[in-house]
Image (cartoon, rainbow, N blue to C red; front, side, top):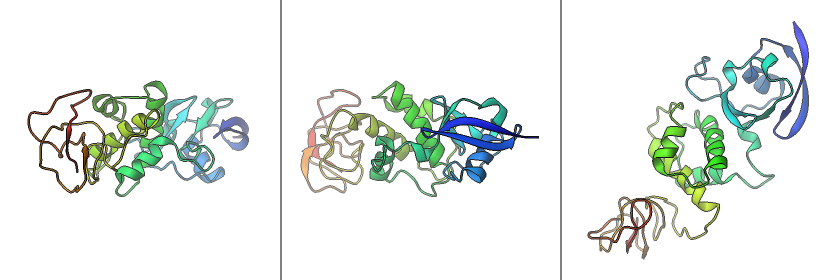
Length: 217
């Protein structure tokens, strides 16, 4: 039976008419026209439909409307601050972390929730936080790097290349292995390189994974 539900969606108080057993995902997409959250498995297992429910990641395909009355929902559309992308959205663009993009909206909201609790997570923490999300494009490494980069961007502007792990940039600061070497892949600039693949030998390790000077990727 159709009822009227009141909830806060992306900071705006909304009233929606829906069957109590309708899923939150259906209402977001078909009633509120917020189509960033996507249907994947329908069982809450793949992560494509994840939204933030009272600030915590939740599978909207598996959440009935009767359970969200009066609660706060944030979709991928609500992560940005006006015209300013959320740091994790910006980092995903910088790292070119998405391929087909189908799973990315759910990953972005889970990553935003992680960064709200742990502003500077390491790679293992990010991997654990995104464990419920399935991606068949093989872009997981770039996604993890993007989330680490987003955490770092909140309190430093020292990045001088697009790759948090030294992928595809010139002089880049990030996490990974680097040292006093002369070999750098894909980068022509010499500078601080925290790149996994811009590594040399006998580098002085500092921080997460080590840092040094060399030709970075």
